[in-house]
Amino acid sequence: MNSGTVSRRSILAAVPFVAAISKAAPEGHGTVIGHGSLRYRVDKQWAQADPAKHPVNDCHEMVQTADGRLFLCTNHKQNNVLVFDTKGKLLASWTLGFGGAHGLSLHREADGKEYLYGTDTSTGRVVKTTLDGQIVLELPHPRAIGVYKEQDVYSPTETCVGPNGDIYVADGYGSQWLLQFDKAGKFIRKFGGKSSQPINKGKFLQAHGIAIDSRGPEPLIVATARIRNEFHWFTLNGEYRSTVYLPGAYMSRPVLAGDYLYSGICFGMFPNDFRMWQGRGFVMILDKNNRVVSNPGGQAPVYQGEKLQVMLQDQPVFHNCHDVCVDKAGDLYVCQWASGKVYPYKLHREG
Image (cartoon, rainbow, N blue to C red):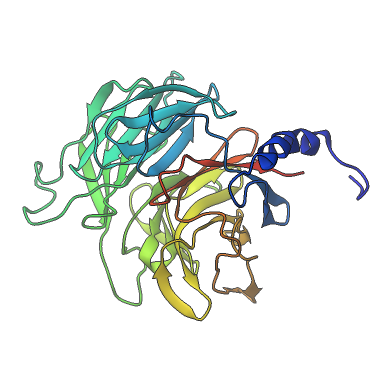
């Protein structure tokens, strides 16, 4: 496309923003953010839910099912799950009564049926449900099966499911282990664990998120070490493989789509003040070589040789990004924690 040509998609994507901006839309609505070919137009008015009827506290995570529906996890006991279409229309809602509903993962089984996996940080419950919220499996608490000692804290934040159906749980707010169960819920092993030492290979300070990374020659586990600004990779049997350090990025879970890894940056830094601060969030995107290629809402990534420089928020579009959902069209949905109880923002892919 030459510089004088405007794509039909760009025109259509801009239409809803014209009307919205004319009605005193929130600051940042309609802004284009991101870098290179991964640039997005911000839609802060995407969700059409009524907060009086379907309130949220924190919008923690979101996934898209095969039929295009978007399932949002919130920690409001009335609405653990809200279901939207891609235009923002609310389709359904249900709850498990979880006060600490945090992780929401989706897995499609061999027969094509899809299930959700959810975690409750307040009780330590990890459940597998149908898409309408019926519990079909609950994992045992590690203390109940002798995996944890009585004094060990268990506060699971995230799950993922391996190619053979094994279930992996990140104990991100607890004892920092990654726990592996088979598809029937039988415990297999734990790996990872806590370390506050400078050399942190395969160890965690806040193992916040976990996912299956299938971009390479073999599927691997990738897990977040949020406080250390790191992602760690392991084999499916828990053997440590590698680490990527991402200075300035206190990220949430890794989200894999195509060749890219996406993550919401929940906390960030100020220039010349490299402490962890709330309200400094943005979105981070890594390519298949795990190099940062775009930071929507953040400064453009800068490498000096192989060393990534500290990344900072550039535009105050977000407060505390907790998750990124990538839909089939390549548009993003950003869920936020402690950000005024807002519904997710949609980022429409430009170009």
